[in-house]
Length: 108
Image (cartoon, rainbow, N blue to C red):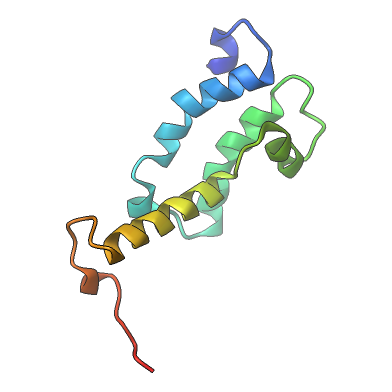
């Protein structure tokens, strides 16, 4: 839809639209539902992979090269960052959950 709705073909403008309209839908509450199977991870990553491949002048580049050129992270890496942020918030008491429900401390 983004490629149909925008007249410009500037990849950086289109990526900004992707970040605004698509990525929040794909990443909403990801610490809660983050996929674990390789097939599920690939299905989610395919959203960004297909979009970046359709951008003008980038179709022949590898996915990693496109991400580097567009200064993007993979969706999997972004989910990992969000998981780590949530763990930090739980450990520091910044969210209202019981720490012992998620972690246990082993003393050596």
